[in-house]
Image 1 (cartoon, rainbow, N blue to C red):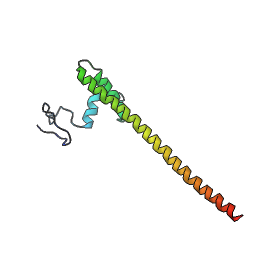
Image 2: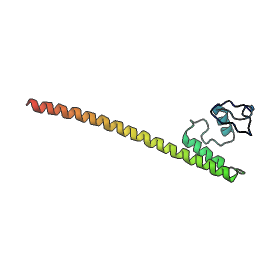
Image 3: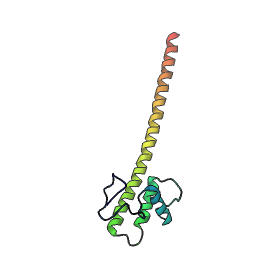
Image 4: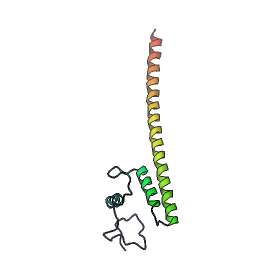
Amino acid sequence: MTTNNKDRTPSPHIDYSQPRLINNAVAGRRFLEKHLLFILEGHPVTTTTLAATLHQIAAKDKVPKGAVQAIRAVAYLLDKMDKGAIASTAREAVNNQLLYMNKELKTLTAHFHSCHIRK
């Protein structure tokens, strides 16, 4: 058994070197788009689009119940990650703005203080 990805533990049941198996992101996206599983064909891949794709896969007929639960669990975790990333980005932007305003206020206060002392 061979695998192209050294970080992935190969499945004992799948030979990843077979040419028709998905073994990279381009082939994976092509497969999802071909089978109408990727919601926004041609759009960037985000955690939100991946979560939606997983929900679609979980809703397909004949997917075992255990697999549906696992797929849905990952989809919900991806959704949560995306919301956490948005919150983190917003928090960082607000903190940067507050630091800037604090610096400007100190500069302004120092300027007024030095003008007041001169008089």
